[in-house]
Length: 272
Image 1 (tube, rainbow, N blue to C red):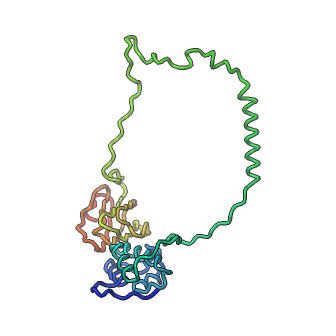
Image 2 (cartoon, helix red, strand yellow; image 1 turned 30 degrees about the vertical axis):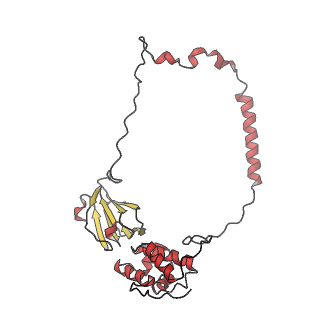
Image 3 (cartoon, rainbow, N blue to C red; image 1 turned 60 degrees about the vertical axis):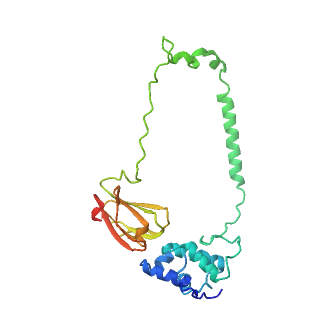
């Protein structure tokens, strides 16, 4: 695997484009590594257009795609640029998933014959008990019960031959709420983030400063957070995220790629 060079058409190289986008969004290498699960040395090497540590083109393409999403770039376009710089798209392979942590393959479990024998004994005892105590009764009881065993179809009709109204009517189902947090409790602060214009790195902390969540919110996904006093947010790509606070949409006028640091408490979110 060779180190990639900058394209001749004036565009920045793949690694430089990733680095510039990361800096523009205010993210550190450690934050990008945590969000994508790509180790810090590999992130640093890719930003220098050194893909030799990725373990092959398949893994390199996967790393480029993940890093692009984390910093708000067009992942497909950047992967296509990588392919053009490195001899085209590689042939499909049956390699393990790119970002799945290595798993230790469990040893084959031997059959538990003791448990099987116990289950068989229990089944036999249950069958014998049912035969002795459940099947020895008078089977004619049901037959002798006559027509009172089952209500007549005409029982629901009144003396005029018309069916009466049922005693119980079904309650109408409530209309679904327009917002997933429209019924947010007034004694708490509830924040919902929806990625509608691309992906964005996000983090959320409660009123004590405890980290509630940190990672990438992919385009089309949403996350909801709630706390009894205050929620603090950092949005790496504010223009791509719609924000709902205490059941109300907050229009912030944020631009794509803009880093936002926000804080909201209970009540009206306009002062967040």
